[in-house]
Image (cartoon, rainbow, N blue to C red; front, side, top):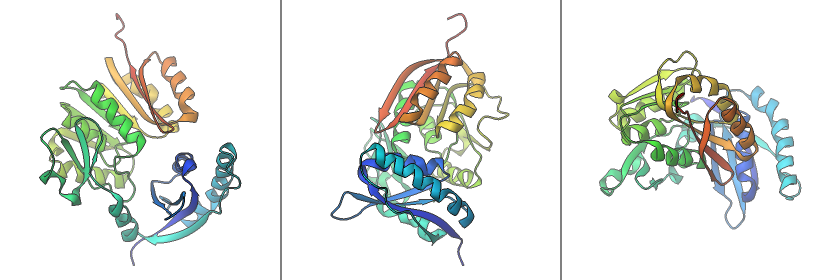
Length: 299
């Protein structure tokens, strides 16, 4: 029998989706599927990523309490019932395919699933990134990834050394190469992420331009970088910031995405406390992205 994964299911109002999804990711979800209930303003959410029922049963009451706080904040009444279930790996891995279409992200960057053959119809202006995100990773169109890609396109000039921390599906590393990076180090501490990213690098024919390393954040990394980019939740971002400052070259750029609105001030203050300055901040829905710069000591 194929591997069975437990999941959490909840049906919520669309207006609270961003907050509910952020809560689920903070509780350990690595993938979320969303489907609008026909004829309503209700989203049917399934969250995956836990290996055992014990994990799910332990966190469900916590999610229930946090979701009620969100509903109270939005004056939406009582939070809905939270259900649990299980699914075979193959069913979960293929569920997202029906909803994943080629998407123009920035002026030049387009992300497309590998099974859509978008290359045949892409325009000359499009820089195409082809992805098979796998079960545990996003399709590249979540607001946090879109913001990170916007930021990367702003700071890239060509010839840079880039570190992509928590590479996931590898989309940001692929984009860095597409935009002219000379060298990219992509890291992730998840074995599945390493496998998925490696396959995506091969599909985009850039294996020789990216070093892929299983690693916890920036622990033990000694590569000096012109650009460091990380798209993850606030807690791991805070843990990696000291190392990021250590590795960032003078006049380098640090791109931080995945910051939910309630963590904005915490990240901003930490950046400034480390001697960086926030050059740009961007917002999409309730998510923020910072571009922070490291000035030369004589600058």
